[in-house]
Length: 215
Image 1 (cartoon, rainbow, N blue to C red):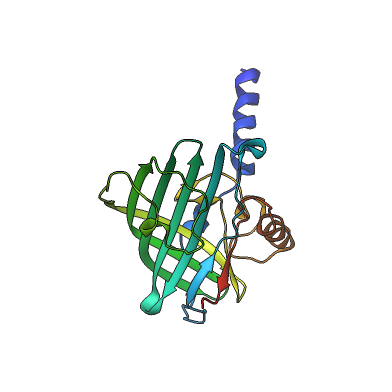
Image 2 (image 1 turned 120 degrees about the vertical axis):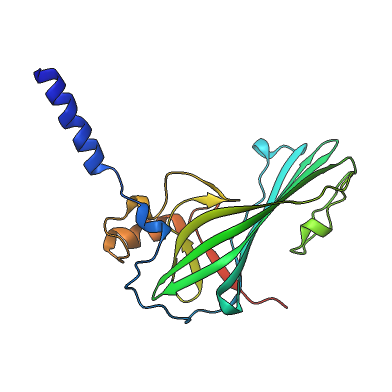
């Protein structure tokens, strides 16, 4: 009996200690909404990767959020893999609405369009333009797969950058990030600031999108 009781108490402790992260999926209804945010392109810093410096495999990717008028947004993710004898390309584009209240911005994705293809052409250099989906030399043209979704994620806005409160890339998430090391919902506590600095400065896939001015 005592063994069962101790196990039950241990389970309760784990539940109490586990991060309660439902709050990163919404904004409280009593939070006043506002439109004080710079519209345009926010890009995630990216660094090309290869397997231990291999010349036979290179990974390139781009991620950005485009905030538009009328509280609309487009979120894109592109991945270009270069192998010795071929290349592979994947592209995702999410569209939806956003809400803002003070320092908090909620992106609500309604639709996701996905596209991928391969090429046997030798790629010597990746184009520097942003629109890879129109420059990748697909061997066979594929139609994008459009489907509805219900993906919400909260971001922190500091006036020039957007910080996702949980790791997410190409609409794939993992259980770590700023909110996981914070203590209070919707609060810029000392733990929150430490986590924002830690994840916003990561060398690989930092948890931040910086506003950019395009020529």
